[in-house]
Amino acid sequence: QLQLQESGPGLVKASETLSLRCTVSGGSISKLVYYWVWVRQPPGKGLEWIGSISYSGNTYHNPSLKSRVSMSVDPSKNQFSLRMTSVTAADTALYYCARLRDDCSSTYCFVHFDYWGQGTLVTVSS
Amino acid sequence: QTVVTQEPSFSVSPGETVTLTCGLTSGSVSTSSYPSWYRQTPGQAPRTLIYNTNLRSSGVPDRFSGSILGNKAALTITGAQADDESDFYCVLYMGSGYTVFGGGTKLTVL
Image 1 (tube, rainbow over the protein chains, first blue to last red):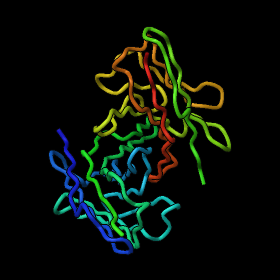
Image 2: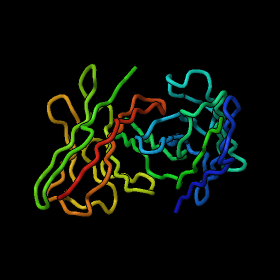
Image 3: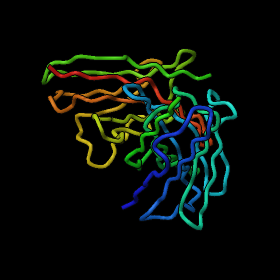
């Protein structure tokens, strides 16, 4: 059974950089049919896609976060990471890592989030 | 920027059928956006209900079904139960790992 586990500081000061890591166990991160994704949820609010990365390092992030977000992947450690710069109170949220299945061939295509971490709360202090 | 719309809240009586929708502020939702639906209860990570418009995830009861209704994706719960009370999120896929979440629907069963 695949498991994802987020880790990182639970408290970050405003204007500083948020760094989180997701460790994948029970399966390899090095498969082309998956993207490795960060999603966040501010307290009492909905889910927001932050960005996705493939094991080969191709990334796509939410345009609303502009250039504050960067992601990286380390297949040798089965981990991927998120960095968000210049954080503000609006970045206070529960941060989830997840696996997005993008499994398409000429005859079928399956696309959905199939595994999630439990989430880690990051609070931005002033 | 793509904005996905959902009803903020919905109330249903036990045993009734409810349909939640997922639309776009500009344009129509089609199967090519691979709409998927997730259920989230307090303190828990989201769990997949429906993907590829109408495929049920493993273990999901058949009273949950997905479809395209008009220009929106839809999640229908047939015979709502008290423990269906949850937040439901629609996700559309734009390709290359780019996904957009709807704002979520808080379903109340009473």
